[in-house]
Length: 116
Image 1 (cartoon, rainbow, N blue to C red):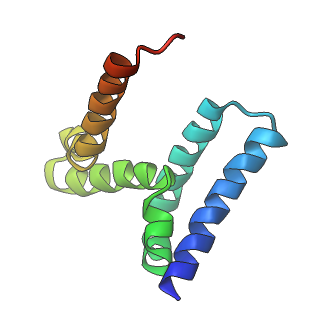
Image 2: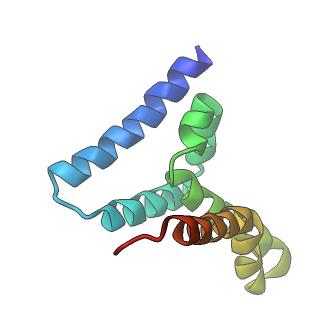
């Protein structure tokens, strides 16, 4: 049953993104930014953690989870270190994802020589 909920929630997030692309004529950058902000807002209201407990990977794999991680880390470190903790928390939880995106983007550009 866990797999079914993960599939339905993750698929639902993707369907919302596709509708925004097709119907609202938003660019992929607008949809990406909207999903990151949505994840942060849901975490601000303590709803995203409940979604993760319910759907598992269906909620942690989509880009909305990145917004959740940004805000979650910032708020946790802000409690401990004050204003400087906001920056510490953002980079502490998301540094692995950011670093791997830069590394793999560079490797793809080196090996495949994109024309764009």
